[in-house]
Length: 595
Image (tube, rainbow, N blue to C red; front, top):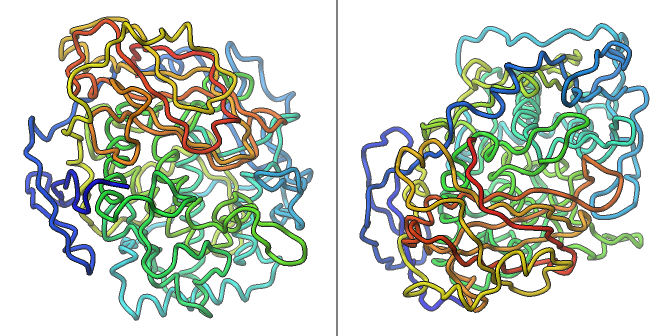
């Protein structure tokens, strides 16, 4: 339990429209119950450092390899005989829609009772590329908490009509939900490898195209081409609750298969989405804002940190999810889904349906509202400047997906065509982003941990399970780095050979300069580096229920704030929060990455 009911580190709010104007905001303006947060004095400028080399790894690959187009989710267009051998890894071969098979429920070996495969186009071999249509007016996606009664009525009507369409209509609500099931739960395969658009650089562009067509279908059904999906701005204290329009029973936007704890204005806790909140509201909001700052800034200085690992067939050594996919994307899914192993009737036990399982997530209308804000984070992140830009690797730009449009026409779409939301015909209504000023300034402890009393990393790892908090000392590759060096290379803490049972929820927190008695209820302190969270899933890269990943945390900023820049060796503490008994780690290192 937090020691105080007040915010420990209230952050300055910053409006999207004015990066120069700062205004203080308190919880009393966000919630009915007043709070008296204490405004912290800043020790340094509000600016943040970006540490990436301009010569990105993906740029080198682009220069050296002439890749073939990668087509995901569509068959009949390419075959193995059409692909010349490549110097490194081969592009991902497209699964054939005709051989699309039953999907598997995340977190179990059970098959989904129905087919998640899309209707097969009549001419599978001649599906055209989608060309963005001309527009006369941008669709403006509104903040879900601020929409009018008229908007809600229109949104409900569009969703109702979508649910009333024939089940074989590719625009129907069920068929739209099945898109996520097919791409995320093993219906598509490349030989023995399962296609999975999560936990890689495909995460953001896949969901952007997905929402694009879903939104246009809704608009078509109510004859309003300007209709835009709302976005659930959970990155703002006012939005850290389920938007009220989704909590009205007997309406098209309501889903009975949600965890009851999301109702009645409950605050989401990004750090413990499965549990009852153990900290007071003030500390929970502060923790959430701190996690947003770490995900958007501290740990996302370079493109592949933000987007996720490269995903190409035959070379999946560096697989892993991006920062926003980890938190808050995954905690929101877990929070909204049913409690696992609860009785759903008919002898069936819950696997987190709907939002808490990939196969069923899109059966909850709030899924699209949630992912609208995930998509907005992509736009906001690029606007933060520095080296925060889209990936330029042609393997990413030429990756493709398959969707039906609002007129039931099948199309192929490219990642490279979805990088600009305005060119796609939509934008986001402005909203404050207070987390941008939530760089922690408070120290959780005085002084430095005595590293001479801590076992070195090479004496601690590998570990077979993370069933308790562990501390270890680790050497840095260099010390006392210049600002120029920091701008060129990001210092990162890397957990290699991270393995866990992908059918389980897992989460662990990482701290610098803390011991095993660290207070994990308060994350708004300079020692907190970040968290890893997993939503049970069907893994992209193997047939087993296990994972082998790399987890990175940027520590350049933390070393400054803790005053460890001149230290050769630092202390790291890892604290399991959920599923530690199914987590193993092969090794840990600190490296300087070009980007």
